[in-house]
Image 1 (cartoon, helix red, strand yellow):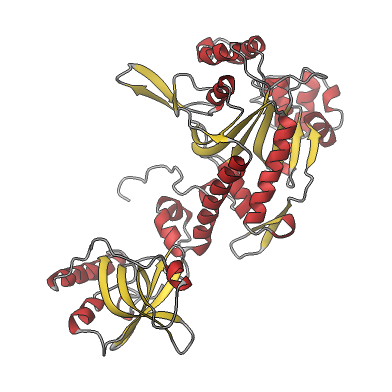
Image 2 (cartoon, helix red, strand yellow):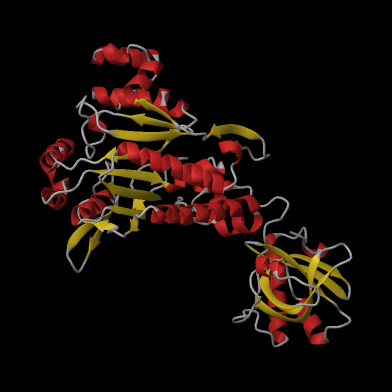
Length: 494
């Protein structure tokens, strides 16, 4: 973004002081520098769409370029959708208007009225007949050529990132499109969107550490939900055949490139379906979203800061489907023939730290995560995982040590789990009790009571929306697709 010569190299404090002088000057001119509503023809994109020589329009936006050419001035007014050049002709505007224009800076919000015209260089522009200061900016914006490069500033002051960095604006625009299209996709297939409690007396539906709070009027503790699953299944019991929720969930666990304590999930349940039908629907949905965002030939390209392709993900259908067991055997031949000690020795040879894996199935899962999941780039539905990992899914008829589920892996991470849901209330109670161990108070007995009224067989899915957007936009960190990610407080004095 351009700046005037006299302020270009000034320290921040000096720049702020100059802008405050202009703020005072505006007030001395009888101008309210924080004006009220301004009636517009529409957004920048709207004005460009109806643009015609001589057409009278009104437009408001932030000044992102300011070129003072003596008696005449050219400004760019911008919003999230683009920019429009406006022209202030010093020979035609009155002295009061020109005096106001002299106090403007890049970053100010301005409203203008005037006629459309095209400059000699072919630039669509507005010739201003009236202007109104709508908000005086007291701090200079980031330089347009360098934007906001520091990641701490980008995440903590996202508004500056969005003002200065067009790729960041595009990522969040695409995120909104993805969420909107998911709703439309499911609505067309007969799914009903519902809302379930975010505060729960017993957090269930996943194994995770919850956030705890207290409700004074009821005199009881509540937990922010870790998943909406158990409430959505109550709706299957009630007779709703297809339901979904786009929800915020919370887990009081670590923060990483792929984890944020507050995140967005899609969960959907389909009565009389199973995990196979759910996998087909998820495959259709993700391919549809990729096509909507313009991915050509079913290829999603991830790029570095210079725009060079670093990884290409092939979404061409049909996607691979393979069992958990066969994928581990491919990675570590003979794994399932080993006893517990043999598995520990093999992990030591593979330099895998299993100190946190006391159980055999936990060792196997760690091998899967490190040698299968992290190395799987193109889509793969991993099916029939050990029952210990998914206590809410239906046991496989042919091999009751596994459950009828899929885990969709793309780009080295899980994007979506899908289940054939367990609807046997006695078996569900037994498996939840086994999972809870000595902490039986963590079992949602009201959910189990609901199952005893009868829940139809069903397929269920979850999709991490943040990770899905990372996949489709090429973002390398979950913080790049969450508008306001959680950060540590700044040290005192900053």
